[in-house]
Length: 95
Image 1 (cartoon, rainbow, N blue to C red):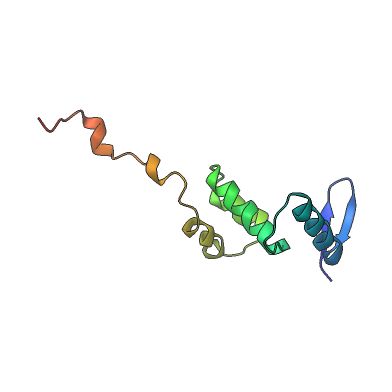
Image 2 (cartoon, rainbow, N blue to C red):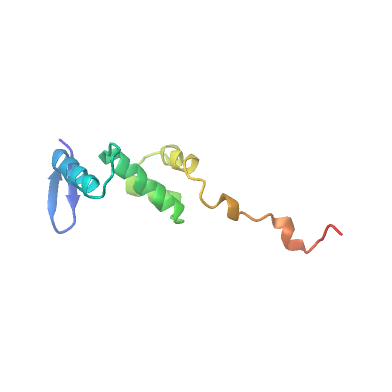
């Protein structure tokens, strides 16, 4: 049996956590199917998008291999448009 520990509240069974998540999704008006895995996946993706070092995410998720965590790097595209070409800093112009 899988248990989820919530700080200052103790342990919840997997089924209890599923019911809490389902209720929260319904309250938020989310129509799509939401699972604990969806929540875990979203959590990791948001951490990555907000600049959290991937090794920290790996540790939080309990992945033994960084390759498992790197799956999240293929999902997010946030920030790609903010990448600057280092040659732009040379001050060269096309005139």
